[in-house]
Image (cartoon, rainbow, N blue to C red):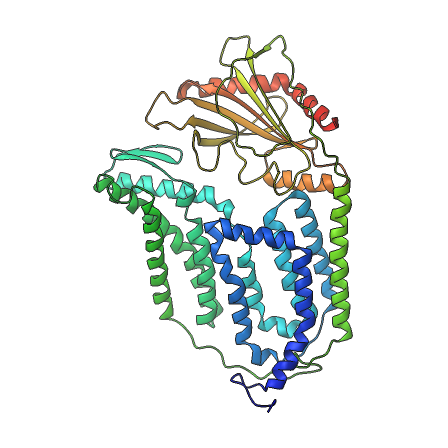
Length: 527
């Protein structure tokens, strides 16, 4: 009775032996997820709180289903463990370690998924891995990644919407991501970027191409279409919503309901894309019976090489977490002391606040700000310093949420950005023009020119990647994780005042940069 065939063509006994053969791998997977539980929990928490990545909840069940579809073929494939893959697994563990030291969520999560993926060929060999190549690669869709596309896609959406409005005869005044038409004010916010549509379309488009096509050319072409269609569809959606609201005197699609209309429109576009793509679908290739050499997956046994792989992976996980524990023990703790530069003959301190604007940098270990006024009696220059120590995922200087203004503008909004440097010093600066969140057609809205730079253990940079790498190296070499953000700002009276504001910031920075550098080094040395 135990040898009765199942719908897959395998006997119950064969399936049972196959499941027993998988027990070591399943136990190792459970141990990996437990060892890297903080990374796994961080990944799932992003799925929960971010609508952009809610689709990731579907990834694990889809992967399991894709594997289950090939159960009959997999049970007859040879198991050939590859201990040599402990070398790339070591590199992945090292990458996770560096990403953990630099508090880069996406990098730690990619490393975790890569570790799980590499365990398959290491434990079972290349024959089984080739049959599971797509499910294993599909697992990377579980990583919440793609936020870096939000800003450029917001710009593209605003560009298309403004041009389309002008072509249809609607006058537009634009400033940054905000624009005014005769019937009202509009702003392209993060939800309007279309990133969530793009990522969701990419995932389901990739799955559709795999299940419906055999030709690599057709699969690649459909995946490219699934990337292009949501971008263009989002542009059309944004323009259509503005036009509908404009033509109906803001009675339709002017409130939060336009987001609902957006999902309905997106769903229709994706459905249409699948209907058209299905016209060129190809039948699935017939299964070819493999020729087994040695133990097959359907045989319950642990080969010595498989045992070597399991012990090696466990040892690497212990070494990785041991290194993290040792580095954390060397953490100094304590709040650093920030002594702002004193007044000089050319720049006196001014107690009157320049503005109510505050940079959106969260959970700094220490914060200080003041104003300085030059001898030319011009507008003062504000200085804001946020100092970070004992950084982690809940407190880090370089983060997607830390910026000149809050992600969803409330009191201030950023209307332009640029690059500069400290005159005579060569230190790079990231600049931005900020405006109080009043009507964009109001000439009375206060404006600021701001410039920032990150300081990471003695190195100045405006590159997020360099800052993260420098932070990881400093921690790895036992130099600590002290870092700070310096922001200079001054008021702008009008568009013609921008060069004068740039000159004020440049003059102050050039004159006081040695003092600012000494301030940061002193804070680094403070307990």
